[in-house]
Image (cartoon, rainbow, N blue to C red; front, side):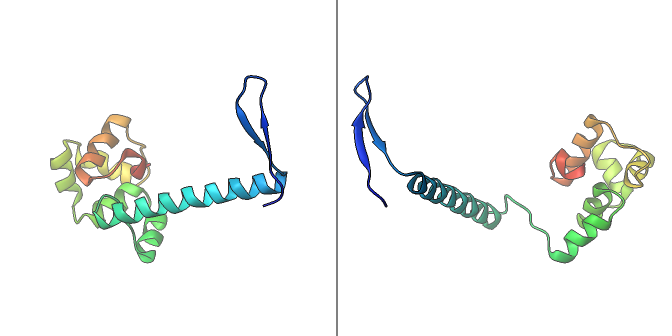
Length: 124
């Protein structure tokens, strides 16, 4: 670190003046620390089963699916009929959403997400 100058503000607050390069290094180090902490929290959440991960093949399958609902329903091992019964949403409407013909209302997606143990964002 380059030379650091200590000063007092007019209100008496202790302050430090440092070079822009030193400041940038400190900001980068703080960002790296935050990133490491986020990564560690995520790793622990995955280990506890709080975050679901997908294999590379599953991620490709999700991206190729007509809708996220179709992917997640199949991943959970449910038929449209079983999902319909568990969610109270008509099987025909589930079919329309999966085919991409209808978007589904927020309330509908919320019910489907709850049954599939997902967030609504996972279905959008």
